[in-house]
Amino acid sequence: MADRQKIIIDTDPGQDDAVAILLALASPELDVLGITAVAGNVPLKLTEKNARKICELAGKPETKVFAGAIRPLARTLVTAEEVHGQTGLNGPDLPEPKMKLQEQYAVDFIVETLMKEDAHTVTLCPLGPLTDIALALIREPKIAKRIKQIVLMGGGFFEGGNVTPSAEFNIYVDPQAADVVLHSGVPIVMMPLDVTHKALTKATRVEKFRKLGTRVGIATAQMLEFFERFDEQKYGSDGGPLHDPCVIAYLLKPELFSGRECNVAVETGSELTMGMTVIDWWGVTKRPKNALVMRDIDHDGFFDLLVERLGRL
Image 1 (cartoon, rainbow, N blue to C red):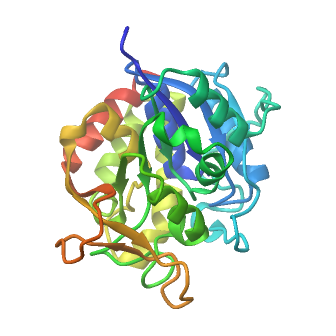
Image 2 (image 1 turned 45 degrees about the vertical axis):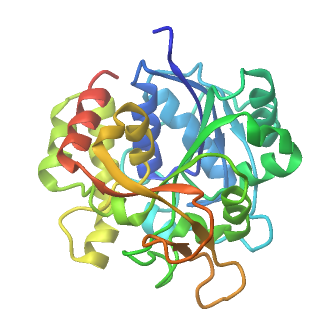
């Protein structure tokens, strides 16, 4: 494929991050230039290791994995072991990775890649807190004009928050970083809880992954079963929301999603609503539109895409 989309995945794996990475590595339309790990769901030492475990599970050990920020810009790190388990990837028994972590710092890799590749050819795909992306924008402001787009999972509006009543986890962990990214002028596509909460891993859907009969299929089913138990208890739903793969699915099939251009601001001052994404859905302010915010998803089409692609690995 001549016109493969070049992407950098910034991630804090996480079972749903793992599925997003598998989807990207299984898709010939995407050229994964590198995977950068950030502290989030679990500390950095685990997220960078988990990213390598997933590349090996996918049979893509040549993928470059870089370690990034060890903590948020200004706040103490908050993690989510209660959701993802102590390793961040509880569920399947994945071996310790043999592939090496790259020596370069993730933020330097992001800056260097964006300055080297043609302008507007690289898409950033943050699946966790936005610390690495914000640090790259601060370190070399020139990259803002070179990024094709940032497609991120984070925030919520109509659905409220999932870690506090008003804040979604990724934004809550580093609201200052989210603020930098949203003010960067880069085209942003946002996958908030409003859309990801409609992508539920029902038992019949998990069974489709298991029926693939492959290492990837079975490990995915095990990850989803572990991960969803927390959300099933919390939301009383059949299955848990599959947040992060929405980012990669959008690059492959944007028609699965619908939303609108809005202004999005992040609360960075009040502890009560810290990390809340204030989405001007109805256009009641004069603030400039800075993100395409998704609200709806064709969830059957989304899971069909996931099963078909992961079946290739």
